[in-house]
Length: 265
Image (cartoon, rainbow, N blue to C red; front, side, top):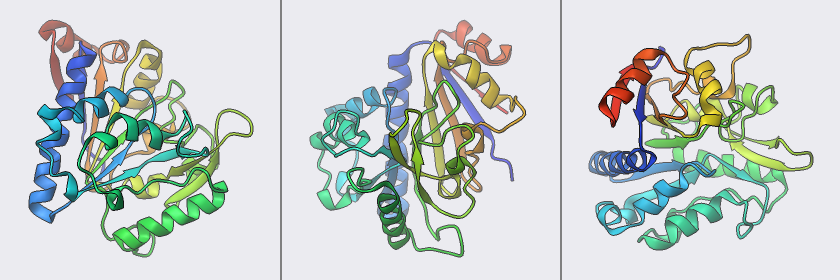
């Protein structure tokens, strides 16, 4: 069944981050109340960093029962965990070092290992944690945060890559956009089992591709278009700059309210 896509546009990036932080707090409370834990999969990149920093501040951090939170990553660059380009390092410095999250609840991808071995090890970790069915897990993430590049990639699933076309494995090693730079990424096989997937997209350089993704344009599916949760919700949280080329019913509401407005399709 095709998931309903909810698009929420914000004219102010700070307000976009604040509202998403509120939603994460609420989602964590619901999941912990129902299942005694909250399974959160983090995105890398520059867009989510202010969100992580905000979640680490007292108004938000004190409203989450961190010992019941487990943190995972959607992808990682194949670099040591203290490397400036490490997604783990960014999340640790922005959020994890500032909240009462047990070290045993942090499940990072070992980017310092050989890429294929790191991918296999992370898939084994996830299979142990979630339980494995024939292909899909028996359980999955409560919330997956994703970004989108100007080329339509998400996580480390790049246009035309074998990783984006994977139909069985949950985690794969994939060449990055720069020669010789490898990454480890979750695949749509696992991402599409999540209870909630939220894309965070900001910046005018994303406007053309966001239009393509949301309107299903182009002869080939872009990686971001492949993320369509089988039974979960799909949210797009975007700022006005990224939404500049979307259909008028999206952009008009943002301009009129000066705040946020939701549209469904």
